[in-house]
Image (cartoon, rainbow, N blue to C red; front, side, top):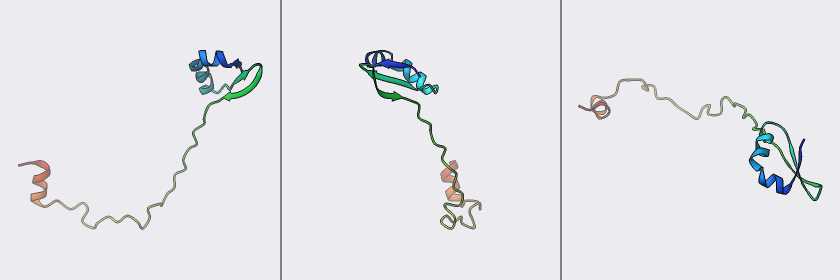
Length: 78
């Protein structure tokens, strides 16, 4: 875990962000005293919740029935 002072952290910030992203924590110090830690953020995986919309969505019985001619002409043109 590298220790850097604030001036060096400001000067080479993107380098230390890359290190943190790769999994290496970077300790930032002021006057030799540790004051902050730059670390990566682990994105939590969202759990899939099945059945959330059960009984809330209804599909019409004629969902896949052919469209009336006038509506189909509107989609496809003359």
